[in-house]
Image (cartoon, rainbow, N blue to C red):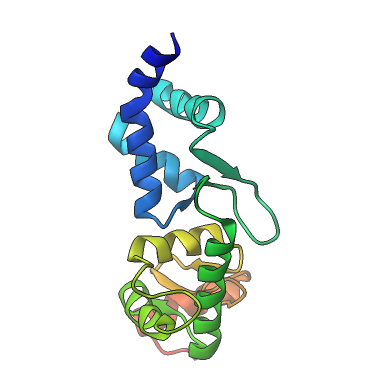
Length: 178
């Protein structure tokens, strides 16, 4: 019956909602599924079950974010407007345009929150997890293998050519660049 199914799904619904709320109401698809698998146990059957629950059963609570020029595919709580995510991404993008260089994760989180204070997005309501989730979802933001965050178009964040990759590794190793 419907009431019995609702009772059985209650713990799943709570877990899915709590994970998304912790991340500002939004998460990139892969990160969201990995987080849920940490709770349920990582197995093929759980992976398939999570996908089924998200796409077919929990549609009253969560909604997919389709991949586009602005976003990677992800999930959001139905009550979390996409405009909130766009505001956070715009604030982070503006922060990096002002900073003009990639930053380590801890520095990025601290300085971005300070820069966002008084901006259109309240720094108090945006958690570290929400900032990182926004970076994961945005196609314009990214991080390199060394954990430095910045604009995806920067070669130090998203190296495209072999020379960019070599330069990044040498800079990281502190080796001479000649």
